[in-house]
Length: 106
Image (cartoon, rainbow, N blue to C red; front, side, top):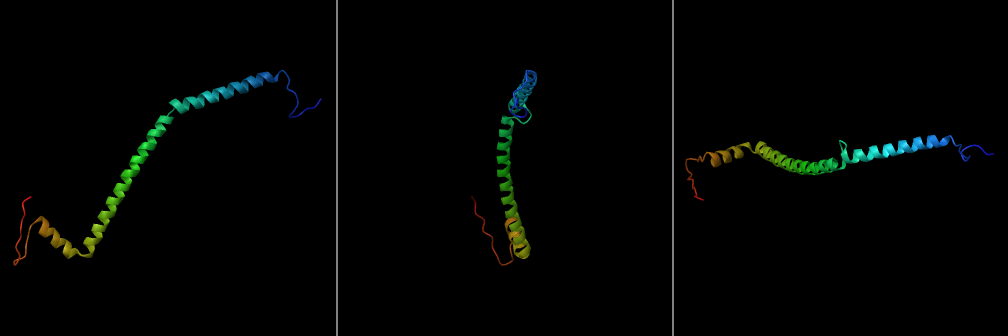
């Protein structure tokens, strides 16, 4: 009789087989339950992915706004006198002694 990996099993192995099958079925049930009802189930993961897409869009918009503000800051730092004069003319409607301001009604 040949012994080793290919040898016939004894009748005592059926209990081990049942135990292994029971363990496998339990793990299969546990995995399925977690996929459907666990903390990070399939629906929750889908919601997280959708939320991540929205957050990525917001991040891109904020980065664009930040870049524009940095450009304005650089422009203001380079030509401070011009920016101050522009601000004073637009917001305070000030003028030089030899100038006239024309206001248009909208």
